[in-house]
Length: 92
Image (cartoon, rainbow, N blue to C red; front, side):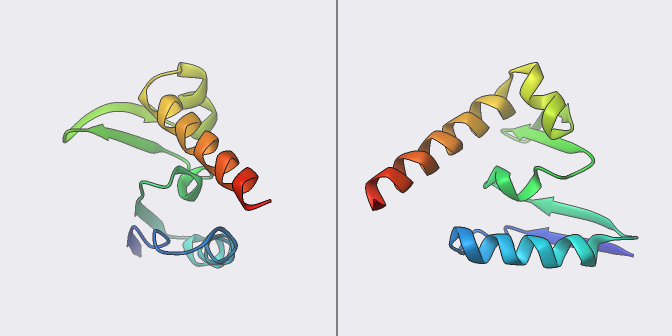
């Protein structure tokens, strides 16, 4: 079975997203899942992440490997993490 998720959590707040992610972890077991996401926290636990830039594959790897490679994925991940931290600080 193949599971395809296209921006499945993009409209959710952080807490709701985490609940959906936990449910999807169970749902994905024993299946191939294609997850399309701009919010990179959604795909951190993926076995393989394919990074596209303007329709071209520019990086392939897992979360840790892509961060270590310090390419586009790492740059986008840091940008999103910084944005999330800034939002948390503003809400205090």
